[in-house]
Structures are given as C-alpha cells and as structure tokens.
Length: 144
Image 1 (cartoon, helix red, strand yellow):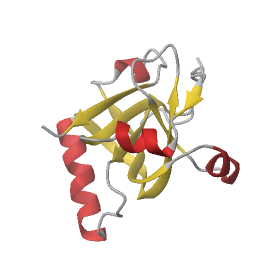
Image 2: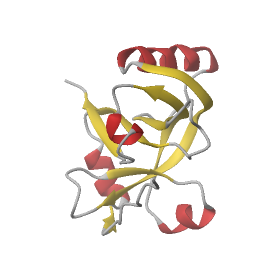
Image 3: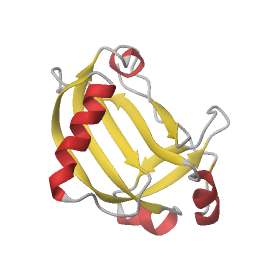
C-alpha cells in the first residue's frame, strides 16, 4: 500500500512561520518508509526549533534521547543538519505540516526557515498510523 500525499492549500509565509514556531520546542513526524525497508518501516523527521546546527558531539545523544522517549528502535540512514523547512496548511489538518525542502525549486518557491533536522528510518510500536495504516502524522512539543 502506498501513502497518499497531503495536499497543501497554502504555505505559511516567513512572518507566519516565525509566529507559528513561538514556544515550539520540536516537531516529530512519522511517515511510512519505502517498501524495501522492512526492518525500518517508519521514516521519522524531527524538526528542532533552532536555526543553529547541533554540535557534532551532541548529535548522537540527542538522537538517542528521542529514540528512548518515543520507543524508537534501530535508527538507520541518519541525517542530522540544518535544513530549510516550510509549513503547509491544509483544510484536512489541525496544525501546519512541516515540510523538509530538498529541491532547489521548492526552496525558491516555498517560504521557509532553517531548522536543525534529524531525519532517519527506524522501527517503533508506538507509531502504528505510519507503520500499519500508511498514514503520515506529526506532533508539536511546546516549551512550558
């Protein structure tokens, strides 16, 4: 079964992104992995609300903390770096969907901000929506 793309009705502009991210600590997103990754059926993206790259020596401990907190196992194909992130609005979603922008065309046409992103494939029994139902979901964590 193939995951369906979420249709964006519009994108937040840069001022809306700044306001939207006030008090956001991070966003975690889970999507189905490509079919050929049976041992790591979930594609995770963690968007840290910082425009600064994490120092090399804390990248692994930060990943391990998220894996422990969310019961994520066997992370592979890990990318941890600053990346442009846009936010899509859809009438079918309660919160803006973070979008990792990798194509130059998207970076040029979609308003975005820089965030430290940890992107990887893994397994977890806590994310059945992505693992079994082939759905995409995301959750915001706020500073208190």
